[in-house]
Image 1: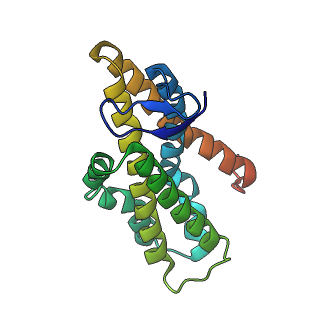
Image 2: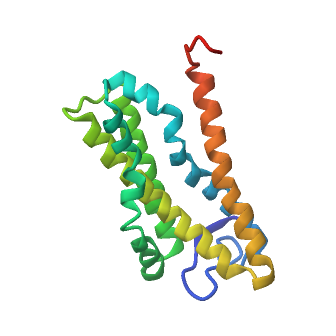
Image 3: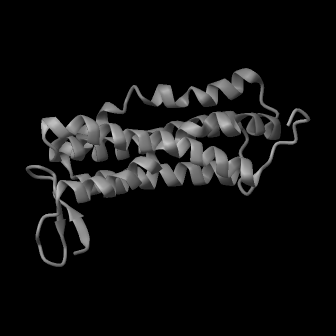
Length: 188
């Protein structure tokens, strides 16, 4: 069976497009691990913040302003739950992924100087905040679905494992970054 749509009614379970049957909560759990992994990448800002500071000649306060963008955007992320409730899990996942990848894609294009901006601090701050909002859409859809698909007895373990995948993403992102852009520090 190939899952193609996510229902927003009832238990928020995933329906199979081929046979119309419901997938088990454990199948939705495995699928949610990929979403949780994607949701963790924005937390790797500290990995590349010094390189960004150097490339754009940012002051420490400008670098920290960009870094605090995630915290600032959290003041409005309660709306991600409202989006899930008023639309569907699938819509929220697509919306979150689109915002996340567009914002960090634009951030990468600016960082690589494919796009020129007059105020890099403002651009990076806005794009980081937007990326965090996209991440929160993924989190609301993923963890809400997990919480509703599992019994109280299983819920804590399942959500904890999925949440740990968000943390793993930061380590993976850091390793990839350091592999592609090794540090030139003399203390290595």
